[in-house]
Image 1 (cartoon, rainbow, N blue to C red):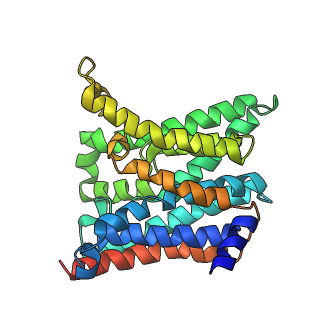
Image 2: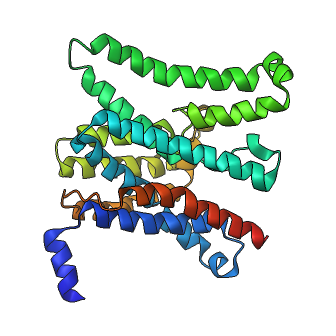
Image 3: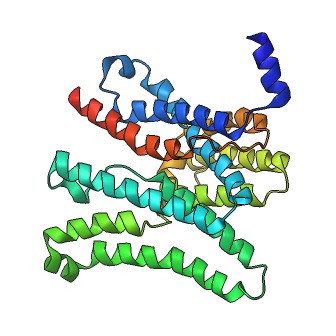
Length: 296
């Protein structure tokens, strides 16, 4: 065991090993979120929740390297987008099969859309440096940010539109989530997407680690200010920012403990069982969700 730890410290870990570690953390998080009614899980659900927080930044960290060294940027973007759609359609089907008319109620967030928008913004920002693509890149950034948000607002707040579609409004709202997820309201929100962008454009891993530390420590600092600074009512300001509740949860800073695993990454890519990770994400959380309902 000591020899193995020394070997890991000296040689680091490749992308496949880091994905397996992140996958284990993710499973712990979803066990706490969806299966806390199971007696053996309820005992340690708080610990499992904290462990689960580590998975998203680790996958984001690996996503940045994949975006940088992929053989085809277009194929990589399409893979993320189509995988997110397949997962969304699968869960729409399961909502109809198991929960009848609750199709319009969000079942799960789909973090693949968060990763998709992260990569899309990265490539468009890169294209801004090329004079031939500058205008198109800027317009594309505006379009993918504004259009889905306006569609969401139109369907959610247009009474006339809802009255015409009636029940189909619920279906339309769910399908909109599947095909045109709103980047402002994706899982972890624009804050997390911006973290991925900064990690991508960082010059080296040392700079990436500094950026990640600042990101993690910013939220408890903000929490402290909101709780203790009386002359500025930050609550009224922050509550209008999507997903701010997640980051103002004082446990969210725990993601800083993903840092040692990032530092151990040796930069070596390993694409073994690539599709396994895409499949595991929706399958395991649906199973855990249904198991949790059995014990309710």
